[in-house]
Image 1: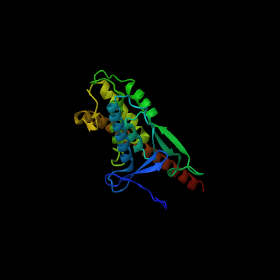
Image 2: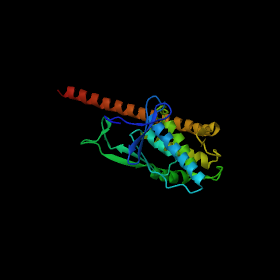
Image 3: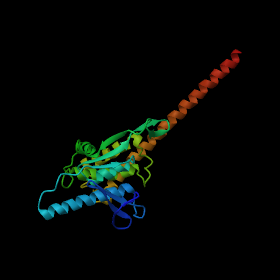
Image 4: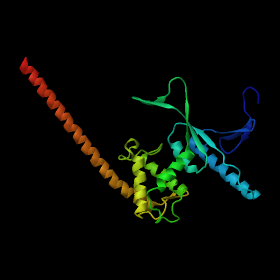
Length: 254
């Protein structure tokens, strides 16, 4: 339309599909549609894949080349959501952040961007989860996409936009590495006979195996923190004692 307006076709609720010209299609989902933006985007991506699979099945032709998806945002949950889509080509565009005393802040001199290639991360996770672990006791063996689904579930224990992290699980203290180690240990010891997740559903008995291992890890973390705190208290007491002695010696010398 004229005057900067847009024309489009209304969908369910507050979703609109807008023709942008030049083969560009814009899908607008406003606040009347429940859900966070990144969740809506990933749901739309999954619907695209399902539609492409149906079209390929109807035509009896092989599916076309995979679409390379890109999503913009700094939210760490985007990484988990992108991994959960299982899309073979996915990137996250992020503003480069400077790290300083007040946390992360945008780079000076205007925005610059970095690209996180989720499909490359998936390759590294496949190597990390598969290596040094005996998967022979797991039904169907090592399936990278299933193991990565479990990895996404494990990361929820470290916290996300809706859940706080567990007290013993701090990312800066290596919590993600610890969760992977617990998972691989349970697999190798055949405490897990299958994957924790399946098509978005969680096997509570298998999750309980991880929680028991996490309880032992948590105990060690708290003991270590208490030992470190006691060590720091003693060091502080020693410093204060030295300062008092130096002060008394200075007074005696006057």
